[in-house]
Structures are given as structure tokens and as C-alpha cells.
Image (cartoon, rainbow, N blue to C red; front, side):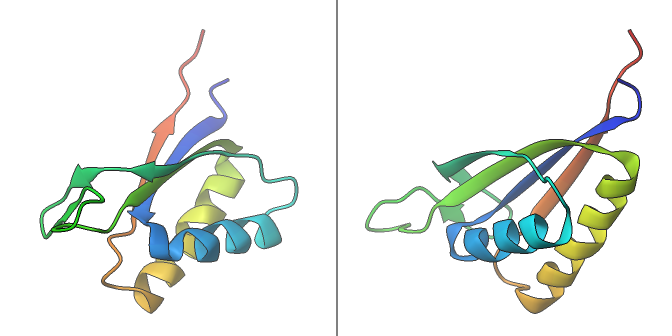
Length: 98
């Protein structure tokens, strides 16, 4: 288990397809779970899906090898440069020894 990483990506729904397609195309057998509509507040804006704050976020998480975690970090970094205002955040947690 210690060689696995939990990868969590939170971003605006407007880049959801860009992120999932890139990861699916670049990492063979990429498996993930997604919450496609979620609300929240970041440092710069709220995303709560109402008439005042109409945008929504999504959350994608996956359990991957260290090698794929590094690859995902690079790929998502490229998308952060391409879409700097879409609030793309990525987090990694290393699995614990049992």
C-alpha cells in the first residue's frame, strides 16, 4: 500500500473534460472517481451554483503509483498554465504502511 498515492484534483467544471481526457489518454488504465458538481469557496471566488455565484467545481480522485503520481503532477501543471483562472488544485497523499 505504501507505494500508492491518493491524487485529488479540484477545479472549475469548465476544465473537467480537459483534465479527464488528458489523464485518460496519457496514463494507461487510469481509473478514478469523480464528484462532478460540488460547491465551495476558494481564496478568490465562490462556486455555489446559484444566480450570484453560478459556477461549480468538480473533484476527481484516484489511487496511483508513485510514477503515475509524478506524471499526473506534470500533466495537471501544464493545464494550470493553459487555464490559469480555473482554480485547478492538486493534492497528493502517500499511502500508509499497514
